[in-house]
Amino acid sequence: MVSDDLMQENKNTTIVDASNGSIEDTIKIALQTHGGLKRFISEGDQVLLKPNFNTGDPFPASTDPDFLHTIAKMVLELTTNVSIIESSMLRLKTEEVINTIMGDRLKKLKIPLITELDFKYIEIDLKSLGAQHLRKVKLPDQILNPETKIILLPCLKTHFVAHYTGALKLAVGFMGKKQRIRLHMSRRVPEKVAELNLGYKPNLIIMDARKIFVTKGPMNGQIEFPQKILVGTNRTSIDIEGVKIIQSYGADNKLQDMKPKEVRTVKHALELEIE
Image (cartoon, rainbow, N blue to C red):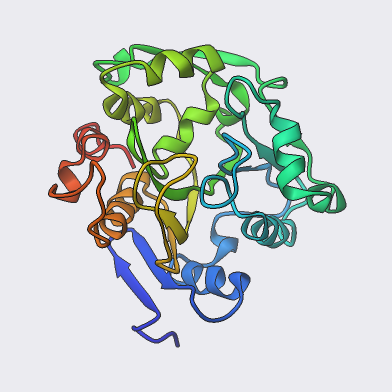
């Protein structure tokens, strides 16, 4: 049994204290209430792990290498068909960014990288799915295969344009780089981030909120240490809990003095019934 002091369950999201014990043990504890990793992955499944390597800046700007390495090993125990899928910001080469942060860890695990150079884009009519601001988007066909299992591995941090980064914002890394630039120049970035998520559905989210930004972001900001791991299957629910964590520090950001469900990305995701 896990102590209530170590774990909270909020609807679809489990929040676990990561201040003691290994990363692997903490993640396993969080997964327990969801039936364990075996509930989501079977032998032979194709699994895509989506971290946050938009820039080469250190955690929490980018995914913690120990966090990704640990989850990759856990998934490999269930299936050998595992890849990392990611696309860094316009000026950067994704493979170089990942290899700089991860070293040779992924190569030792023989996990291939799927980057924008490998993406085969398919245009999705988001308007027909309920979008009002982001009418169309091109997404890689690798994430549109219903047989593929997608595990999102978001960091948690404030964002000077989108207000915060969590599970919903992670999907921006699937967009073509030019469309991403146009997205960030829009006055409707938070709403468009929500609408983007109409285009695909992940199977599992494991959010690393052990260390976060509570100001500025996404590359730097005031650092705090909530020491939490969040696990769930609902992107909107997990982001609501992430917003609460950021707000708990009372820092100078665009989330303060708002109800979590009124934060623009979250509010629109709830309206669109995005899980």
